Image (tube, rainbow over all chains, first blue to last red; front, side, top):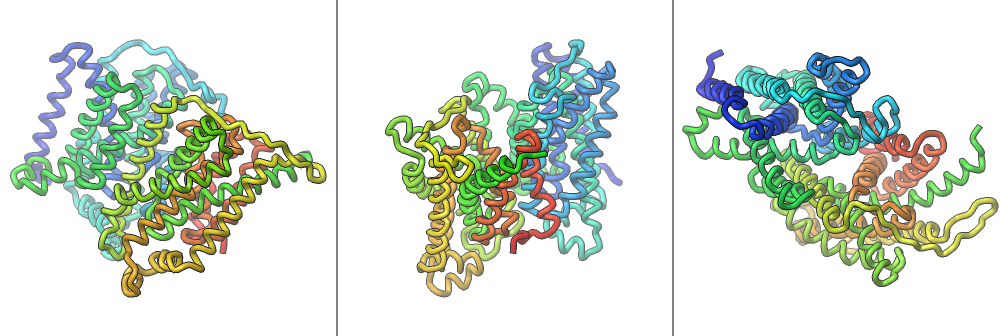
Length: 308
Length: 294
């Protein structure tokens, strides 16, 4: 496979992000850490919703799975949180396989509704499981080590972005775009759509869980009302919508916009940031459904080389 | 051994509650069945209806049944705004709705749902409130039935009957049903599709807000900005169970759902009962997307 200009562009950006802790002040680095958690979530939902067009409202579920796994393992077995990360990914993949195997049979609105009810139902189920702290959640002791958090989440985001690039530029990438445009036609062409969707959903669930795990690690707790909050699902959708669905750079740009918007609005209007984000989602969905990267790509030919 | 009397009374309460669920699902079903769009913000319109009943009761001492009628008027207005702001752009000049349009409206209404619940959180705070409407209860055989719940259930059945008459006996109702089957044919008989879609949507929203008002009888301290996330999934399950576009399916589905939620709470914690009620959606979809109540 011949690497395009955009690959080197991507590597350049990732390299720049990797050295930010040495350039910026400490408080700015923690800001970038939060931004990277958002970006990891955005890339994770991008694998399924962005690429295939299957809207997953319940993606917050995988985030919660990751958070609970990390906190539970580190607390009960007294493991260093970083060592639980592989397990977090594995559990995320397992849940994604089971849920995807059932729900990916449904198309359009039925898939969206089933993911939504799974996320809501799992919240009510967690509330009655004493081992998971029922309605109080779990708190655990962590050492304050922002650099390790930073590089863990950075590796996750870098991996996601590179995987996204290679999927988009492979033969499977064409198959995925065919599924998004017309699934029946894709199946008629001999594309095994169920297998492709399931693999994407598993990748998506794994990374969602990993991002959730790092989120819980850096905040040292997991509370059910917080972690199952559908606002995370909305923010994830907002990020890929604003940035550009299924693109390599879209999720990152979207994450930066949504995160900075949230960060500044939260001081002006506490709790009110969702009003603005909700409005932004409505407007973008209706008027700019391609997102920033998608629209720019169609308008300006030169940009196409850099972002494709 | 579970007390038979307890089980029986819970079935009765479940049926009474189910009547309201039916109206709630009918609002969703009308929009889903006619213009083929799922309103993810359905629960937030229920929440708005409940808050409007609460404030009408607080300031003017109006009981939930009267405020349900007032809510219908608010709902018709809000429904028109909802249609022209969010839905119209995707439906205009289209004969069938593609997956792409469906995705856009899903995401847009999801944005609306978070927008409305956050707005409610800012305006009304996160505390739960409720209406104290105690007008006594009657003693039938061996169980007490609160009169409020009984009147509300009767009102619900009347509303469902009324909607049925409207859809089958009036010109507008027939036009709405025609639109749900074939948009081009509707244009051929000289009906304006935009007008019909807008009217159907606003009636759907009106029914939703009305059900929110009726629901306040059952939740003495349960009106809060998050209540939508409880009642919206219930409505989705009912509509899928009964089959979209099928009114009687919604009625029967609502009653079944009411009984399931109420009786399951005898055996398991209430939150788990709701979780099970939500998850019923998946086996139903695996069996048939057209509903399992024929």
